[in-house]
Image 1: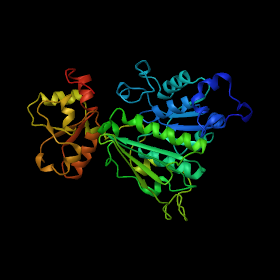
Image 2 (image 1 turned 60 degrees about the vertical axis):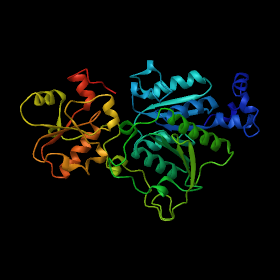
Image 3 (image 1 turned 90 degrees about the horizontal axis):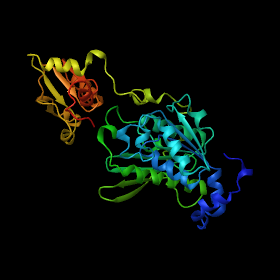
Image 4 (image 1 turned 45 degrees about the horizontal axis):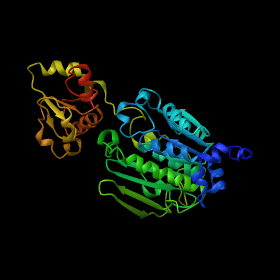
Length: 387
């Protein structure tokens, strides 16, 4: 929180926020509330980018950014807070610089770290509400539990391909995220945006909605999405709102809570640590160079491409059998049981899951191409395009 004694806006700030000052629901008093408010944004990617930009522009006085990643070229299609010049820079530093160039009258904290059960309370202590710009279940459950245990609102958002969701989970006034989703889905059952793709403008829509909810909560105006889930379909251009009810048996915010402390959510969700790819033991992977040598030999070998058919428009390996990961369990009879299989995808995440699935189905000689076709392009054949 900013010092209340500094709440008077300067002439420069009055001019900057003049369009807010004309709105009865905001006015000078509302703009002061925005200046005194603090918001923690976890994730400065697709959702965090527009949310951070609009909260900064609106004059939210203290904004914290939590992220551990670096800006990558593949981010720029949707993560509009970052520039081409920021590639390979920490996302929080890139975002902070952009926000301060947009509004030098605010304070922005760049926290280059993974949000964990160990550091979440200390990181979040100075902020009034939390905005979710993450893309994984461990962080989502952690933020929800942190919000409920500290009595602060949690502004939820999620995106996939053409669809997005927004809600405000405030256990003091309505349901929490666990009331809706008591347990996370099985590992690998829900593809990430990195694996399934996302429509470039979709995060802008959903992230801006999240920023809208944050500003409404700060100002105490309108009807926040507490107890409601907004579902947006960009392809059909439809918006639905589903009413949610508090679960009296919720493990977190119910009448007899079982979750009273933050836990290790990476283990809870059964997935690798944040920032790490789905990994396999070394003997279950093959390097691009070793695969190239095996292909040039005389031994039979099945190349299994578990990417979606649309990805073959970008790049392909000659002779590979294409069975998307989501169809693999139903098409096992198309693969030889007693011959070597090398599974591959774009970066090695889906092919690692395919190896686990095939092994559980009785396939013995199956490995994953480490780094996928992108690594193949970098290390073996540059004519295969990366994406």
